Image (cartoon, rainbow, N blue to C red; front, side, top):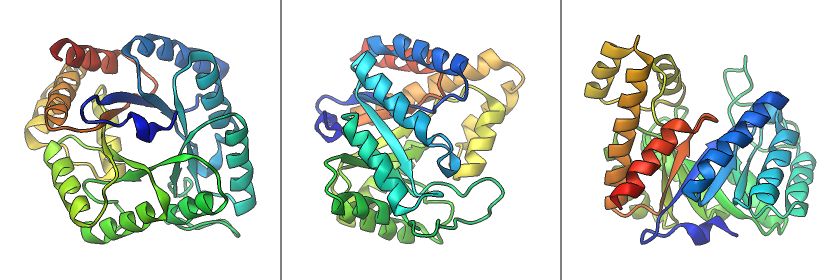
Length: 290
């Protein structure tokens, strides 16, 4: 099933992102999380790709296992980091052989210790090149792409970022998933600017429920997402109360999702951090109100 066929504002789907665990115990816990989320009938799940391709084999194995053993549609992330064209072709071939229909091509972050992205010899510098490569090689994948409502941290301006995104879309993307954000105004403004720029494919908002104070501080520094002042002050007051942080995070994300759904988004993608409770609470509340 191609994900593009599941993105419909009249019947929006919920989807979840996971990362490949490093241990057998972690894999068992992830499969348990998937079992807990299965009753929510996810439209799809996605599996990330470690820095430098460090989880390449585990990503391929995990998306294959998810699709074959659970029946849930699975999308594999794929990055340019550290890979030649030949290596990327081989990974894509394995995914096609496993009957994976959906891939999320990304440039990827520089490996730890590197301040800027350096392409592998014979590799790619931009996600748009990887998208074009997949299309030129005639792989029949549905392709998603990443986008940044507040602008990518490496771009000089949001206008520059939008121009790069248009090139990536024109190379052959079918839909977009946004970086996490905590203020819906950024999403709605971004969609409006994207439509004016001629980007007409579905744009799925990405939501990360706040469950840990230090964690959200780290993520916002990495990706440049803005925490609204009121939310930030509330978090600061309760940062030493883990349960209160989770309750606030779930409440804020639920309100975000209610507004997004009311204004016609084609779906919502949850960054789960391989844990189900917060996401289950949010989706349960949304389903109860629908």
